[in-house]
Image (cartoon, rainbow, N blue to C red; front, side):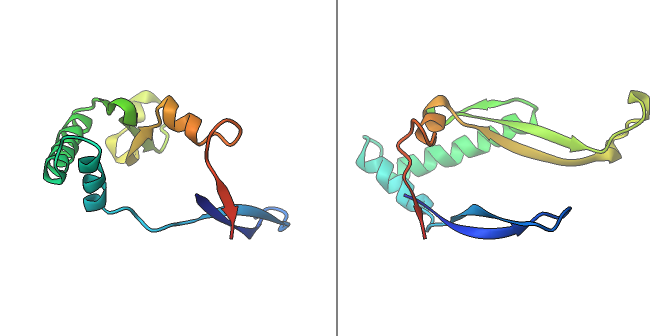
Amino acid sequence: MLKYKVIPRKNPIDKSVKYYAQEVQQTQMSFAALCDKISHSSTATAADASAVIKEACVHALEALLDGKSVSLGDLGSLHTTIKSKGAATAKDFEPKLLRNIMIRWVRPTRFRAAFDLEKGKVRVQKV
């Protein structure tokens, strides 16, 4: 169950206050616990699951650094995005204008549907 609290936020322009939901973070499932769960629902041992996930991370990082997107099957996909400052013309653009390179996860339809408040099975609770 996702939990949230209601907090006030001030509009920086007109200083009015409105109240918004903010997620309350739950405890994190450890990597070991994830591997253990995988071992209980498959023929892989926890060590097998750990080794495969760790190798997948190594190769996904290599692919992202090579400018490729990475399909994770039922987990979605990863790709990079670049943020930069603007230049007056394409000729004026220099690498020093790059500000940030991020990795984005694209949710698969199954994840998107699961968290759809109208159609999904997500449960929320105010704390």
